[in-house]
Image (cartoon, rainbow, N blue to C red; front, side):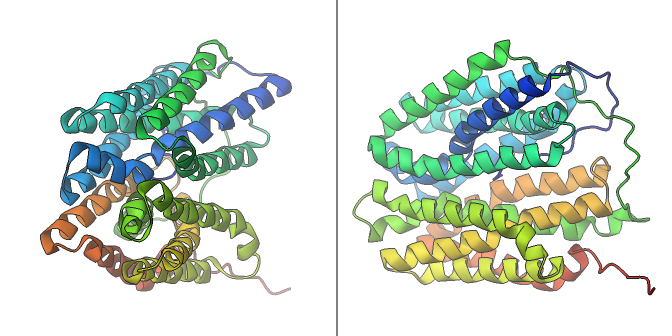
Length: 402
């Protein structure tokens, strides 16, 4: 999952942990953003390196796709366990454990064969599932006055990491050197975690602001779950397979990562523009635009046969997919409440989508002997979302006449 969005932690009140001074809180937030850039590289690692590891391990298209399943299923399990760990242990323990697993997984890829490679991908996927939610919560607790701004900055840093991965791969121009560099950056981020002051545990204060929870929340859960499944799945399909599908039209696997970069750049840009867009159009209309642009980009990628058209298709797909998932999350939070069990179910389906859709692309590509044929599957899913969006987006707010 793509992205750094978190699963909700269990609704258990804890005693407050360490209260950092404003200066130390700012310093910790900057460190967290720096580490999140590195974790953004790790989260999206498979996309740019997939053509290279496929050649090194001599694996089929279906086996390539299964690597996404190993990463994101492990990440989903890790995210679910992250909330349990935070209910019993400190932020420091949970984040450090997750980052250590990321380091071990990335390092193992340097020498891995196919069998060890799957375990390595699962290891860093599980580590990301532990670290990303815990770090989001730690930054939120450290910046209680400007909570939303701090978390937004943190996830923007994750997006910078997603863009940086393909750039680093092209600069190193060697898979082993690239993995060693990423591993070294993860290791550099691990040491400060052992000495930095962090809040001890997640604290749920007596905030009286309650979500506008529906009377019968489970009725909308299938729609929310399917929406999150599709958006996360499509995001990982394009980001994961971009370089592989672009490779035949580029001179080498390193230049093919331009497709990943185009996707993530427009993905990040579109998320940054969501607040401005919502000042002009409703969430329902923005969600429709997101779905249509996503479908158009993925469909264009299916037909693209020139480097320029591939980059344009990936850019349009990123532009469309970027706003979709946050809009659905906003509605889930509003309709269900972040601590409702139904919310956990929805977020779990987001991880399942990130794991299964990219894997299905590989299976379908091998079955039909046409690698890109699987791209039609997420297009169908996005089209199905169009009539659902009315239920997923919040209803218009009634204005009382004066």
